[in-house]
Image (cartoon, rainbow, N blue to C red; front, side):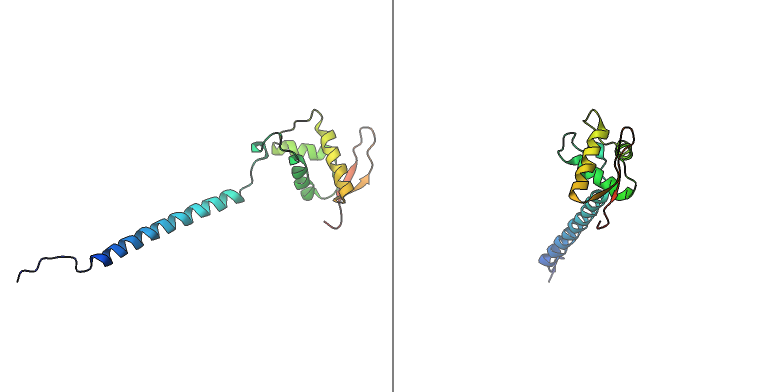
Length: 130
C-alpha cells in the first residue's frame, strides 16, 4: 500500500499559524501602546497650543508659580512664560499676568507679601495650604 505523505493534522497546523499571527499582533499593540504612553508623558510645548485657548494663561501661570513658590512677581512670571514660548495675545503681558495673580489671591491660592506701587511689582508667595 502506497502511503501519500500528507499532513496528518491540517487543523492543528492552522491553529498554530493563527496563534503565531495573534502573538505578532499582540506584540505590535504593546509596542504602539508604549509609544503612546511615552508621547503622553512627554511635555507638550506651549507654543503648539492654540493661540486663543481661554484660560490657558491661568494654567501656565499656575504651573510656573508652583515651581517658583515664593517671591513671585508678574515680570518674573512673564519672563518664564516667554522662555517657555507662551503665545501672548495681550499688548502688555505684565498686566495680564498681574490680573491672573490677583485672581489667585482672591481664590486663596496665593498670598500677597507686598503691594506693588509704581515700577515696583507686587510680590506673592504660594499659600501655605498648597
